[in-house]
Image: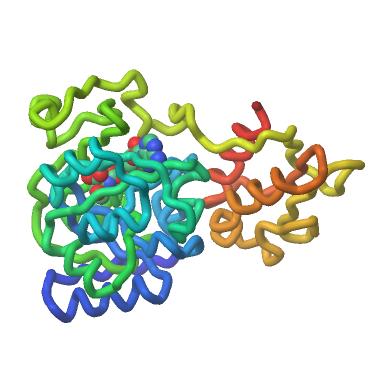
Length: 308
Ligand code: TXA
Ligand code: MG
């Protein structure tokens, strides 16, 4: 990583144009929402999404929230029922995230959903991320723009202090309004409390606090994707009946990154596991991935998949 500082640009037409160009080129941009600053990338571009995990140093691939401009754009990515439409109608744009069934053919990178068949969606209200959504034309995957396990950033300076040169461009539009992350609702369950309170939700639907409250804590999300087949780690050659997922010099039936690039490998991980699961072989083996950078997250995810 270079010793350069991130570029901090004040919100405005020129800054939005530069940020949108960076998103379209597969880059990442820190951008304020009404809750906290997010670290955004095109949700359809798995390499761009992998750069988010790399920049945050996330120890595991928690699924990310996807931000879109309006309900129509949301319905292109997820299947809404009456409850979801009622909540969206009342609280969007705003700090409410809905976990919904992923629509077939939505085109969202599997790294965004961590391979789950659900997607977390929200329509933000803040002018900066809305301008970036409009100018880039991309659905934006964006977790909070802080290093893993650090507190969420509510000012551009927090982002710069936490992520440094790992984020090339920060759009600065002052302090965020809500300061805590959006409320997350799945069905009628509150998975994460937030600015849209249980009382507010209760005016639309009967809701209950979730038993899986802290899904944001690394390692606590029970619903991570895991392959159905046995998985062997640190494999340098396949045994009979194994589908080998290669890395670097270890060539397999499929490869995470022939070049040994962990960012590329992260981008391909969940797709590779799905392919391995769908193959005719009974078992899966995965080549060693160095425990460095986003490789830490890859190995965390693989170890969990192997434990099943
Ligand atoms: O206010 C916010 O929500 C901010 C701004 C940037 O929008 N974003 C944010 O993202 O807090 P992040 O990545 O820090 O938190 C996302 C949360 C995690 O707890 C994750 O586990 C949960 O959303 N999540 C995402 N997809 C999910 C899914 N399909 N099922 C259950 N939980 C999901
Ligand atoms: Mg966070």
